[in-house]
Amino acid sequence: MRLIFLGPPGAGKGTQAQRLAERYSLVKISTGDILREAVSRKTPLGLQAKSFMDKGGLVPDDVMIGLIRERLKNLDSDSGYVLDGFPRTLPQAQALSKILEDQKAPIDRVISFEVPKRDLVRRLTGRRSCNLCKRVYHLDFNASKQANRCDMCDGVLVQREDDREETVRNRLKVYEKETAPLLKYYDKKKILSRIDGAGSIDAVFDRLQKVLNSNNLQ
Ligand code: AMP
Image (cartoon, rainbow, N blue to C red; front, side, top):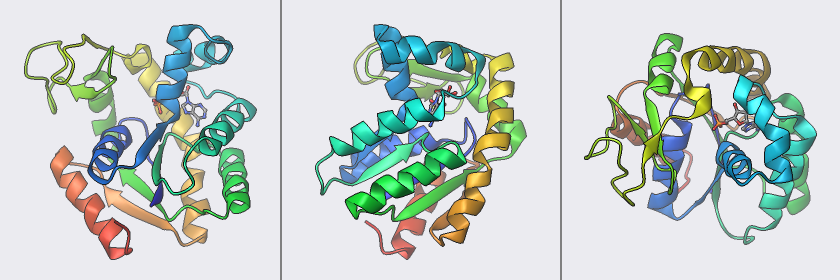
């Protein structure tokens, strides 16, 4: 199963990708996580990406395409994966199609998580993640058992720099301009499914599984 998760920031792509990956032993490939790791290690990639990420803008396409090409090359040929956060622009989507054509391993399904804009800001500003294992929580909707501590590894829960309200608003604008056009791109290829991303994590996960089942995936 090779999947792309699309949707605005805060739509729940990362949370659902994490769940699905655990359930079906898929590899979750999150470009945001890869970049944040690079930023915290101060690698050349991290130094290059940081200023774009801090403003809520996009890291340039050539950097991202190179990164994903390497990541996919290093996967076992038979492992399934979920792409979370890539592609985010039309040139990225076109480059991905080409890479996968060459590998003769096309994407099976693109899932778009649809959430009303007014809910996105609340979801993003309440989001916290573990500084060690990166597991994602939410102050109201998915709180950890002990305040500010990860349930899994006892790491400290922190807020992402770019989840502050001013940056969130810019990320939503960038999504509308650069990423929303991908819905048409994948719809034309007849591999797009839209899912209502509102409601609880469990409810959305049920909808996701139904869509995968109805497309003979799993
Ligand atoms: P995310 O965790 O997916 O919200 O990504 C966090 C930030 O990383 C984004 O706001 C961008 O600055 C950068 N980023 C992640 N994926 C991409 C991508 N495919 N193209 C460009 N920038 C990206």
